[in-house]
Amino acid sequence: KIIKHIFHFYLNMKFAAFTSVLSLLLVPAAAEIYLKEQFNDEAWTSRWTESSKWKPKAEMGAWKHTAGEWYADEADKGIQTSEDARFYGISAKLDKPFKSADKDLVIQYSVKHEQNLDCGGAYIKLLPGGSKFDTAKFGGETPYSVMFGPDICGSSNKKTHVILNYDKKEDNLLIKKEVSTETDDLTHLFTLILKTDNTFEVLIDNKSVRKGKLEDEFDFLPPKEIKDPEASKPEDWVDEAQMPDPEDIKPEGYDDISEEIPDPEAEKPEDWDDEDDGEWEAPMIDNPEYKGPWEPKMIDNPEYKGKWKHPKIPNPEYAYDDAMYKVCSEECTHVGFELWQVKTGTLFDDIIVTDSLEEAQKFAEETFFKKQDAEKEMYDKIQQEKKDTEMEDVGGEDMGDDDYDGYEDEF
Image (tube, rainbow, N blue to C red; front, side, top):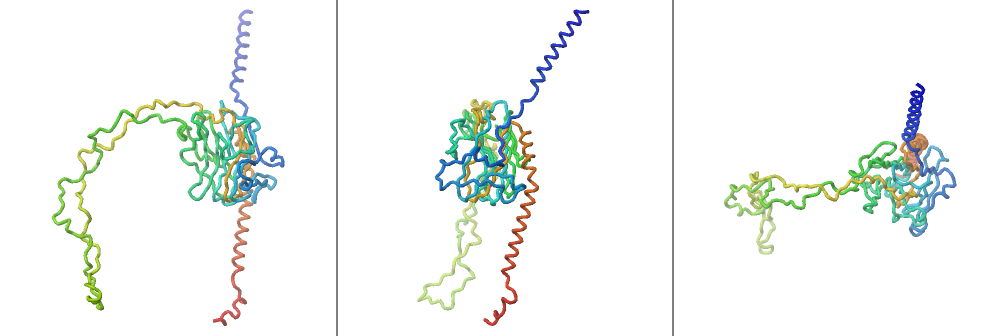
């Protein structure tokens, strides 16, 4: 019995140790935040560096630290473009590098267009580079891993960019079908989620506007099938659905019908002089009997086999890539905005880069959603005041009774 008890005690200890190890393995890895920026202190300029060597100084616009014209809290600031027809460049180092491995990637930030934007970008970039990243020269030519966010220019170009770098192609891949965007004057929240299962999702104001598989929405992979290079359309293949009716014969005298005829209703003017004006001729009009060059009527072709379809075969170049989501395979270390804006006034705020959608949504609740209603209330009030002022100005231009004194005497 003693031996039996010892044996059971030993088994229980082994099981307890096993369950302890298993529980540790099943605990999800703690979420990491690589950048969280709210711009609510004057020290933001020590974290962000303007691009001073990207374009000539005269072409670069200045960033303004402000809450904007309408807001929930005047002390809650962001950074805003402030000069028309200028380039804008600014970047910041992540608090810690992000490397795509077994982690999702979530990029989220808010955008407010206060200027009724007609043409300009408002996208953010996630950037590699590490210690070699040149903040002063950061601009449109700087390599990036992700480009995400709204871009508007004219009435036909209004979209949310989703562009992902694919190192195996050494190329930046644009999403095939454009993603919609918001174009009003209020703050909107943009979220991009890249998942380790090679899927993605775009949220605007926490509402999904596009999601799917990376291989379906981007040109990461070659096609699974290609046209068989050994196959060709048979020489006797008939793919004309109709043919001229061999029994249809051109009517006799058809070609004798002229396109125009003298106008039978025209009359020679009474003052027409044949000696001075020449022989009078009636003007020509379209001949209602003329039906154009004769063509036989078409009938169904009895030899028609349908449109020939090139047979396909498996593409020998196709291979699935489990690592499509790894846009930061060699570490991303910075974020930045590099923009061109014709009419400025775009304000950026509440940026987070993390591997947890839960953390991003928690941050959104603390920032964007907390401020949303109060900002809208202030915006509506400002717009109503502008409308009232415009109505008063129009009314002031109307002439009163005194303005008409002596008016009629002038006529």
